[in-house]
Image (cartoon, rainbow, N blue to C red; front, side):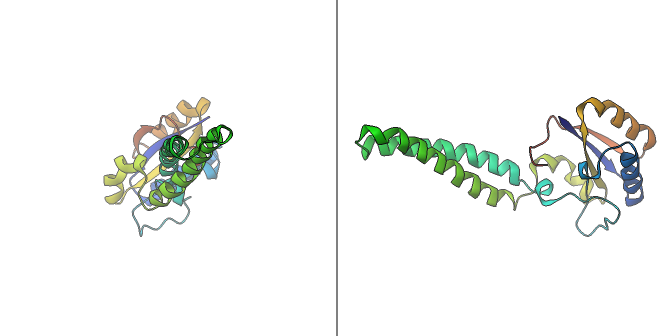
Length: 170
């Protein structure tokens, strides 16, 4: 299990040095992500991808749940009003729930891809001021070690805490 550490870096040089220190601490590059204001040069840094910048995953999860719920309700209405054969009632309810879940996840993910990540809203002001957000996904058993390393070697970095959990597709 991995947990996400958040640090606000004051500038590009500090962010690059932090990236090097994390790599030396054996944190893989694919688990280190940086997010900055649009137009900020990010050479030498592993920039956050679209899944991390947008609310796609959260939107898909909400859409899946709401779509399934509405699908089951629609299936119940169909069973009560149209489907009279007992053999097809359970299939109708389950099928409409499944179709509703898939449709809800698809529609909500389309909306979520256009919306900034809600988990990163607390860092928006710092990013707008030109600072750089570091997101490092660290194994839970190394959390204290890596956090202490970054706090000791980078006093200029602002420790912004730990995410309670990271999404399935970070």
